[in-house]
Length: 161
Image (tube, rainbow, N blue to C red; front, side, top):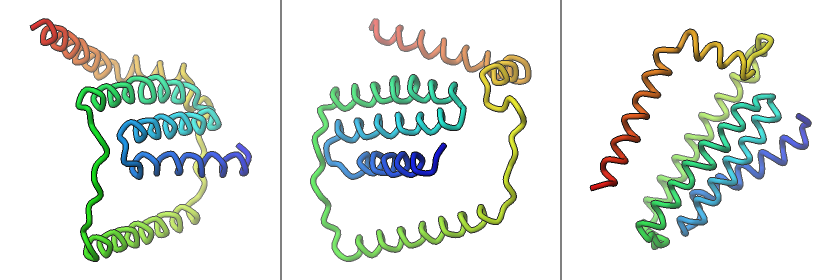
């Protein structure tokens, strides 16, 4: 991925993610989440992880955000009033931001000196994922599907009451 495309996508993703927590309207916040998830899926496509990109769009941008919007509409949430906490709240926010910045700088400094990781051929391909999922992790996969089946049956039973 070219550096310019990466920078543009990174700025758009950070802007959309910031809008999730910065806007007062919950519906606008959910739309910012959709934009963030779609932009992240573009990163996955650029990294040759098409399956992960498709799953990102279908599961998160599709199902989870629709669930969020359904709950928002069902609860009839309105924008929250601003909290006025005075100087103590501002000082706590600045201290938290400085601590996070120090952590991020330390993490990036360590990452810059670490040797580059090489991925094995075929890493992230759908076939390799399916082979691993249905051989080494078959029991966990089947138990997860059984748990989801029980959850769906329970939801149907509760909705009929």
